[in-house]
Image (tube, rainbow, N blue to C red; front, side):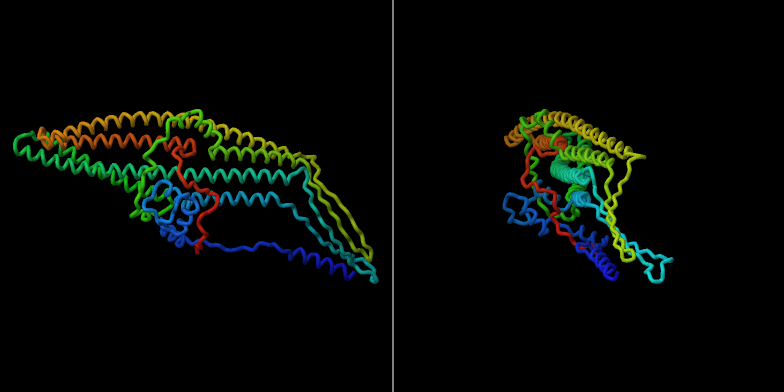
Length: 474
């Protein structure tokens, strides 16, 4: 009598003091601290330098780089951008789900002492008993949960890759807008200076009676319109700088004093790489969002299998012992749920409908992608044709400007004609810049439909793990 309660107490103690328990660690967030951390981000961060070394195939001993190109900026965005932090956290959550899916149900133990109020004085009124409940899963439910968790983890991983592509897309678009605004601003500044000279020449000729007042007035109006356009372009340049900083996950002041290289926009993919059938096939089987949708469909398949397996009840093994007035009574019980009133029809129907939804979503995404590829290829080709025309016009205008300059040097024409030719040349250069911008925008849309750069860059990093150490936010 005395030993058995002691042994049972020891057994309970072992259960309660088992090792491996996780303790809570408080990690509060202070908005002021995190805001200060965001404002302090720069392109000279030592951690960013290590990230460059790990991902660039070239020597990165020069730090910071003398000029930042598209590859450098993309790496900086992968290092800093918070959207990737969110997607990485979602991947970590999905991976933790695999641990949950693989857990086996714990057995339970119960202790049930009883008191007999009618017992004789010579007999102890107490009886001692315990029972153990050991659940046994049937029909391979644990394996099906693990399969579902694996597919959900794959979906989260492809979502991370899709997020990485969206970050790259925004960096390229913002960098292109920044470059176009900067180039346009420089051209307009030059045009304003030339138009100032043109207005002065016409004013002198008006004083000499060589031109009419309407000609001078028209020149003033053109000059003012160009100045307004320059002011608008300066606003666009400032906004593009803010947009670029946001795409990088940086404060705008981090871009002050930074030199940029725009070589990535100086080339176009070869025509042979733009076959519609080839691009369509690449997109339909390789895009991260399509692979994510496919993984979600596989997860819905596993979920349906799991609900079907739940038709078969789990078994509960219930061994027990009772000490009753010096007698040891052992029992071995078995229990299971009887599938009489329902056989899990509702959850099976929902899982089957969810699988159908996932399949329809996958096919709809593939269909949209196919249309996007066809549309963006046509858009790129039409923009390229317009650029060819603009470049031909620019070449013709440059030839005419050289002829006017030669005539001026030979004394066969005056400075007014030379200045007017310079103004016309800049106008054609601006038209060519706009056509070139449309081509680069169309190329960006085509790459986005493909989710793959057509002008391959070096140093494509893996976004799976966070490149920044976790910092305190208290």
